[in-house]
Length: 133
Ligand code: ZN
Image (cartoon, rainbow, N blue to C red):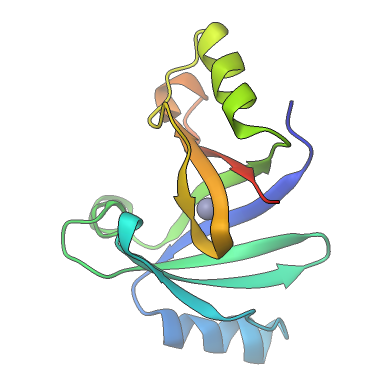
């Protein structure tokens, strides 16, 4: 069902400061920044090989990323797997008894269609299904 790791989502307190590390120390280059209101985040994608690192900074005190950082500190927040057809992937997951946070695809940065699976069903990892056209 999944084709590859589309990206790794990392929760950060300060996107601009974190970008310096990824760009100046690791030598990656951000492919633009985007505010995703639906998820209350500002994101930057850094392509690396055929996958990407997604840095997420919360735009509010009560968003999922703010809550994650309050509980765990900064760090890896989710892993996104590429799927060809997200509606089919969601249906398949549900059929197999996987608890979905999103039963319908929602908007993700860069126009992707995304849906999260509950970590209780995925051995502790917040798993994102991601379809890009
Ligand atoms: Zn993501």
